[in-house]
Image 1 (tube, rainbow, N blue to C red):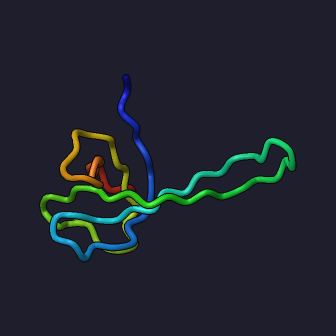
Image 2: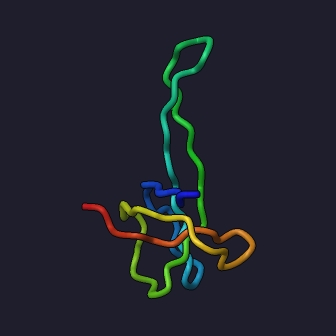
Length: 78
């Protein structure tokens, strides 16, 4: 099964070696036909503490680092 690759913005970098990334997706409501934005937060492993608030990053699914941390940073977007 392929690993998920998501793009989002860092909204918190306070925990050590962890960042919180908010991923936003848009989809069309099946009945109302209205475009809806859905946001979800992911805890992401950042081993070197190099990403800061506001950075746009690409994250990839990986082996679990802890109970809630199942993603790691793939690259920094420009």
